[in-house]
Length: 120
Image 1: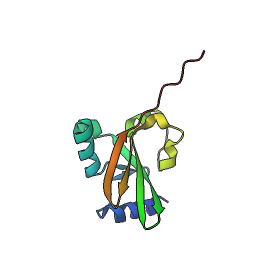
Image 2: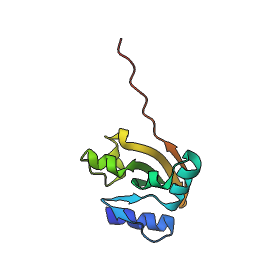
Image 3: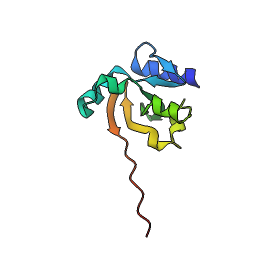
Image 4: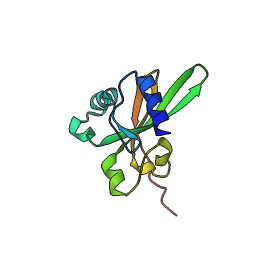
C-alpha cells in the first residue's frame, strides 16, 4: 500500500520521491512555503513536521487530502503513523489539514479540536 501511495503521490507531484519514513513523508516545498507565509512558521519549527495523504477521486478530477503532524509528538506517544486513517483515533496530533488538487497545494488549515462542554 505504501508503494502504491508513493507512486500516486509522485505522479500527482510530478517530482522525485521525497524522503520517507514509516509511511509518512517530509513536508513538500509548497507546504513549507505556505506555512511560512500563512502561519509565520520558521524552518526550524517545520523540521519535525510530516504528512500523510489519501486520494479521493470524484469524476474526472482527483484530490489528495493531507494531515500534518509532529513526528516527535507521535514518537513520544509510541504511536505508528503510516497512513491517513492512522490519525483518526489521534486527532489531537493533527496540527494542520489540507488538500492538494492537480498536484498543487490548495490550502492548509490549522486543526482545532474544541474543548469539551463543561458538565452541569
